[in-house]
Length: 436
Image (tube, rainbow, N blue to C red; front, top):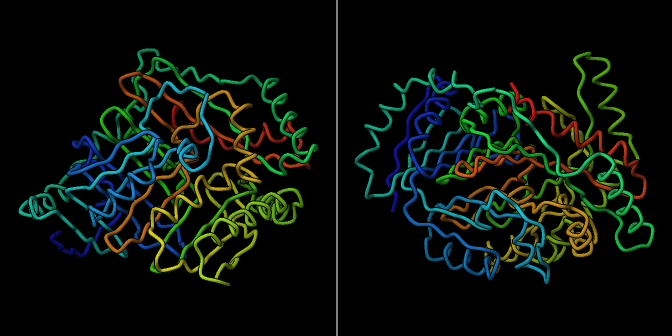
């Protein structure tokens, strides 16, 4: 079905920049980049899928069954995203909040052209109908000039000043976090991920330039750049949602955040303090329990295990506490059904999951949409890999609207003021990418 050609790369970093620059000519683009982050379960250093051949686009109604049918019939590489609001297909829930961005709730496409980079080796996989273009495309990419695209200003408004607004004032935020704490005290839930939105109205940005700025600030292991017509996502995610590799499932929830310091001793102290923070560890352990429960729904008996609990990983902007939960899935389970039984990811909801999502919906004022959803791909062998859409800028070109959201886990030990500061810390990279 696809023609495969491999190339040995001598200047991989340069080729990656040329490849992403070259891709901007297409209406549909999905770029995934590990930023050379050493990750035990990484298959590729970078992936590019472009030029839609077939696709599926739908709202949440029966969304997972429609995706299941599409993935089964295609039997090929498909790339795309799942929005948070697909929760309404999984459970008897609804999304009453609104979003100006108006992204489809689910979108996947079968690319005509696919590039996979690992350890300085490039695999090019083209559909047969376009495989005669492989050599000419490779030559064009290796000679592609990236300078013009790199030097473009990220924001093209005449005054060059980005007016970032919040959907909640600080007082509103504190009131709503206190409302979450009241639910916890009553025993309705024991953790909820409460989020707030930042936005910019009537703005023209250059998404490719914004992505490059955001990615250079954060260098995360699950970065992605998505473009489909007027919809763009510039994602600097540090978090994997779920991966399937043969019969093995891997989930790596993040709960626990601390700032970095340029002073080496102070930075080590911040890292140690995070490792020993009882509140942060309890957040993480609660979500690990939720993930273990989710994976058990499709797991072979006795196969759910916690490989790492509350391990500290350091990124350019923050230290994060990450756990790794694995299982062996029953062979008869369809890959889309695996995702359906675990979606949305526990790190972005809370626990118990359904109650947390109900409470979140009443207290948040913006529809989450693709924020706290997932971006990734399925392979022809029924494997898949998806990130968590956090630390991300969403843009609708025709509506000239930019949005980015951040959240934090609220538990009984939470201090609302400190949770607000954590949100600002997480929002820092997106603000810098838009304002620089």
